[in-house]
Image: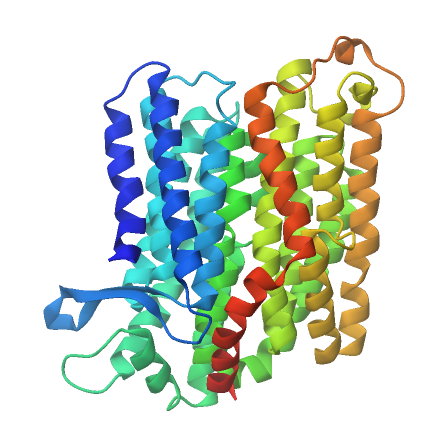
Length: 484
């Protein structure tokens, strides 16, 4: 029942939050989010590092169709569950300096989205996965559409159309796979789908590969399905941007691992190089565009786009290094990007600007902000002994083993990433103090309460990556055995 509790607790919390008023709203939301974190840490501490699915619960959902409400956690799911339970409390805590119109609804939507994300990462039935995959879209759509910037309606509509379009392809593929399972009452659990997929020929797998790839490539996003992302990240309120970039995009990378690799291995062998090339194009293209950005939030948005391209390339490399690297990088990227977007929010609140040309000299009065900003930046550029280094090293090793030339081009992410991140820090924090940065105050207690733990995670995960790699390795090995 622990997995069910992980899903139910944020739903209950969201309903309670809807009934609260005033300053108590954010406090109640934060209290429940930290309770969810405590439950997630208990599951992490209780998890046995093997390839089995643990904390599983299953009961009939649509009995006549053989569809079950089946959830559980294996090593692959565990990383994403930890990411979700870790980040949501700090995302909520990061909003304490803001006043939101209709705050109960705002915080309830965040908690409802957390429940849907946990559902995606723990589902063991394909239609339950699809249900949560779609439900997770609804809260963040309203968060962006109601509390976003001036162009929020146009931008969020584009985001909604893109994701729904991709999801329809995935639904068709899931229905087709479901109909391939034996019996009058077909089955939709992962094990049955994996077994049925073994009987598919290369043509059938090719169509399914295409459908899945479009759905997940839009959600991440990958080149050339990325055009919704920068505008949505910029127009959404910062908490919404954190949810999108820190957690939600991982639904796509998780889908690549959970569905594409084990279900259509023949198609991956035939068409995987196309996916890898698109991923690498995204790395280089996103990095070059990031270098040219003048707006800090948009710069980090393109940075996120580049990072997810490397994760995708590592996954399609189909080896243990690439997949392990992608899993640990999902966690590291979530930590780093949430922290970086929060720092941009702090700067914008104090200066009413995110333009690099108008900033400068902030570090002269903000020793705390400077230290945390640099730690998170170094994690993002994969400095050794930070969380980003572990993931990028394994990813590049996996891609290099897949193809030397592709690995060499993907390796440009290290150089280009350092260029745009160091440029952002230098122009915003150092140099001559501008008119709008005069009197810039250092961090408040609530701001430190967010950035200090995130900075600690950057270093802790870099020093002790085996705290997760040891847990994910058995499940990854089992996944690779299915592919082979």
